[in-house]
Length: 363
Image (tube, rainbow, N blue to C red; front, side, top):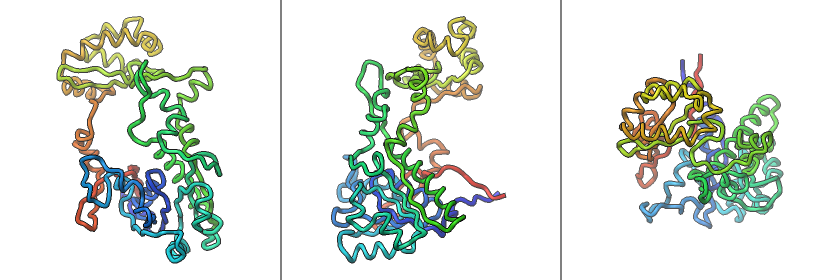
């Protein structure tokens, strides 16, 4: 079978008017699938603001930050000031021949720059205009990912019991909104193939966040349960998300999803009697008696090295993993194979993890 996805969108042109993370990740999705992606950045302000979001150990003289590189692979960058007539005309020329425009302008801003859907549709009636909003269409309230994590309930339930909320260390709301928007664009492309018509596609950060609450939303909507901070633990399953420190000081997390897996866990920890204890025989009982179960399992883990326990559990289909730092992640062969490299004009090699990880094979 032949992998057909790499150049699937080779005839597609995407104009990216977006900045930061969510919008550019939509652009990178299409770039990874072979599309020509032209990223228009504001030359007056020095381009995408993330160029300046550098870690203390990054080169202060570099034009780019590592953050900027994460979602800007294989893009053609044009530095334009869209308030200037000549630069705006230059952008319009590109958009006349484009297939998709990705925008995250706040309401009213696109109209002032001549980059709104009505204006661009008049230039190109087959255009798909993808707009990312913070909230409902027309709401001018600004928002960054952490604000949405708070408003959509993620911050309230993330962290340890009796301690302050903890931010998810990746801007997951941005990334989930990007997934929603590109799914909308894919539907719009299918619609255009059938009818020849362009479309206006929009998604909001807030709605994407709420749509991603999944079981935590239904725990409230159907059971009246307000999710509380539980650290890594799962409210419905045990031991799932529970952490155990091994003899070598390395923590292991368990994700035991059913009674058979729990029985196998106990068998290979040499404590089979725990699996038949009435307090732990079923998941429902384990959730009720979670604290007692952890107290029993903790000293067992402390007697063995993490490598030995993980090998034993994985070889017997018990879901478990070590808690890896970023170096350890990219020492894993599968993760190493996901690194995309690109040589910059100053000969710097930029790296990032690919964002397209599905595979489509031709028969």
